[in-house]
Image (cartoon, rainbow, N blue to C red; front, side, top):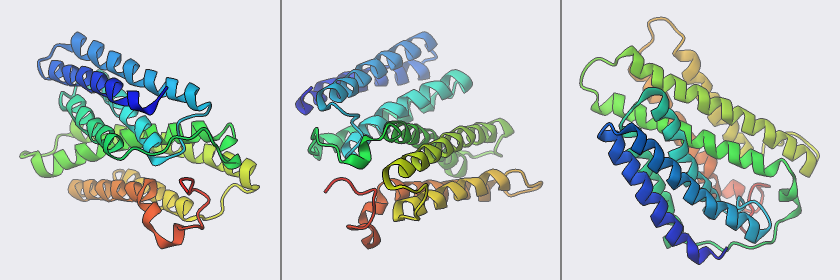
Amino acid sequence: MDWNYFLYFAIAAVLLWAVGAWAAWREKTTMAYTSTVIGLVVFFSFILMMWISLERPPLRTMGETRLWYSFFLPLASIIVYSRWKYKWILSFSTVLALVFICINLFKPEIHSKTLMPALQSPWFAPHVIVYMFAYAVLGASAVMALYLLFFKRKTIATEEFDITDNLVFVGLAFMTIGMLFGALWAKEAWGHYWSWDPKETWAAITWFSYLVYVHYRQIPNHKPKLALWVLLISFVLLQMCWWGINFLPSAQGMSVHTYSS
């Protein structure tokens, strides 16, 4: 599958996701499910064909991981919608997925079949895929936190905070599984489970930050707004872990997680 075909798959998927988001606002539940799921199938078809064409999982470059993030955002959102019927979640995922798709369109990256030995481990693909799903779910929790902090004019309802908590629980669980897969991958590729590489250090910081949110929420008489700020800070740290690390001098030429060169 040539990368030039990405535009056509992306347009079809985004249009289907947009119809699903519109249907959710109109309370046309069946249409929302159907359109969103078909869009997911269309988008994943491109990922699958890229996988076959490259003869490796499309997970090496930032552009390739953005493909997965664009896919997992609507997937995580339709799961949230099916559970809590939050109308805005499908609109959020469509807009954010479109942003990542546009970045890939305007800044295409070289997609080579070449895969360095460290990335040939069977743990590499599940590690990144699970992490991308965790990022998508935690992204939804961050949007919920923004809504509760800046757009909710009345007292924050318990059920709204429960939704935020559940998103964090799911996202943190998948992040933990992703870290375990990463440790197994590191052991096979470099002979040790953890090395405090810059990427690993920021991953640990991010993980502990979300743990702080989870535990702070269990404290009686805690301040809800402070908890939401902790959640937003955690999401900023997550961005640092995902792509911000690439701009740190300490990671240039030193991090074992730098593959683009």
